[in-house]
Image (cartoon, rainbow, N blue to C red):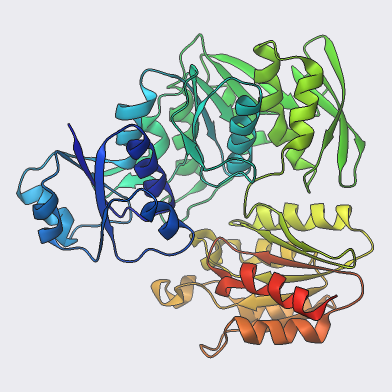
Length: 471
């Protein structure tokens, strides 16, 4: 097998898989409906044949030995139909990861609703810094790694376990293809309402994942999440609880609650002393614990572990500080769920208690586009002082009766004394948002974008605008 063709190559996961295959020496090509920065530059750096638009002639030209079909591709896609009709071997992204890179490694899978990208990034960065040379595949790029993927040379392969469906021909969650030797179970809370009809169905999915872990494997369980604790009762493996609970095997005590955080850590009967964490959000302490444990387990010197932990600067788009003049700070965050919004705003308020918060919120994930979390969204945003709400991403794809009511959220927030501005007209763009920001800028302020969408490219426009103002 030499030639591999990827349909939907410019997706975050598919482009990373393309990078792994390229680094492994395979001859790859691919197609997508569009390819935008920064992924465009990444894919072009592979120096491969890249087709814009899906046409059967593209595959005819390449004559691949294998086609990998991304989960953005549905029935009716010309290339997908050609693959099926011509009986060309094909597989999903998740299957390809297993077949080419995972099956002969010791697999650490990070799963859950919240914190899995940062936790996977923390593990990958830490292992790399400790000289363990891991392979890894992350849903976001750590600031201090060259990419969000690596084949690695060590025994470990660290992978973010996504519960989203695999492909049009395989409706199982992607993480079922990764067969974890060890599982890190973050907090679990109902999400992805577009594919899971109920919380019961969502939790059952994680229960089935737990049953994949071998009895000699380890499952790390977040001790502050009731769902995770209940799920761990289905385990046939060794459960390792981590968090603040004094009975947990890995437990911490916060010594300094404002950024940068300081905490004391114990593993089993050993006190490892004081750690410093240069990330916003106390929950990032929990995100660091699996990395600390694995370095400890692999006999990395404790002082070196502390140095590595304090040096980690997080993952792009996860509470990422993109501008800081002292008075004005701009932070960009992924925020795909009401709980994520709440925790982000709580962490920002705790880290910068004297500053007003202006939040720019885009309902972009499927869980936020729908009204299933109507009450929770309003309650979470109420932690901000000024709230800009962008229009629902792809709102025409959501039935009106099921759509998040942003007018209702506006009314609720204003009744609590908040300042709310809606941007729901098609004429609005990034420049209009910048003008409105200018009307509210104060001497001490946090500007925060919350979205897993494109956010009108505000993550680029806001820092440039603030620099121009010389604030």
